[in-house]
Amino acid sequence: MAALAGLGVAVVAAAFVEARSYRLVRHLVQLPPGASQIKLRVLHVSDTHYQRGQRKMAAFLSSLAETRPDMVVFTGDMVGDDDSSVEEFLGAIAPLLKLPGVFVRGSNDYFAPKWANPLLYLLPEERRRRPARRRLRWERLRDSLVDAGWHDVDNDQATLALPGLTVECLGTDDAHIGRDAYPGGGDTPEGRDTPGLRLGVTHAPYRRVLDAMARDGVAGVLAGHTHGGQICLPGRGAVVTNCDLPSHLAKGLFNWPDDDEGAAGSDAPSIPVHVCAGLGTSPTFPFRLFCRPEACLIEIYREN
Image (cartoon, rainbow, N blue to C red; front, top):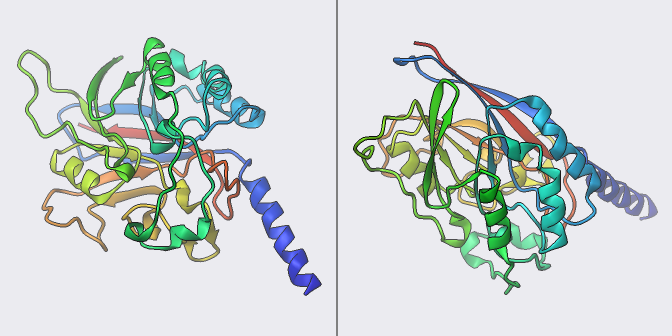
């Protein structure tokens, strides 16, 4: 019994340490040949759940500007609380705010965390009860990011004129709490050039969102929310995704519709999707196991 207790303590300690072992992961996305050549470096950051005093995460966030991306995409759940957390978070990402960027929000940008039994995540989503949570003053963070030059693409779209390339980002609000309303599917407005690249941006990668973006013909989708499963098992990977994707799609780069799962009612061509495992954890469950926190540098290229 003492040996089992000691093993349990060791696992918890390891999971606590791993949750602060930040890393940069690189992905390469090759698009089908097109009329023009594309080379784009996208820094994808998600789910920081930043709280006051997280100096190691703050230093890591600041260092990401050294990767010299062409643009930054932040896919939600940025802070863990109001006021001082927001100020520290903005200070940490100040070097990134000098770069072109877009962002969407997740539920934890709207509401403060509240403890819930983590075993509830093993239940089907429709059987979970979500505790009432305190509303955050999310507008303050949004306004600060917009004032710095980033674009809010929650259920909206924005066009970034980068050197040699125009990128249109079409985003949704958090599908996990039913706030998603994909803005795509229409024609390019008269008088505006067709963008060189169209990207979908969302917090929670629910099938309905990925299906809509695939049907709309975006070149790729960036999402977060899953934390990569947060608690993973050796040889099995993520236990849950906290959305309706299967566990083997909890993080990383994959094609959607997925060969194994498919997209219901969709005959759209397959598109690349990147789900970032994120940098943070829920403040009420600050552990990761076999799932290191990450930010991702995605290099997208196309030959003509």
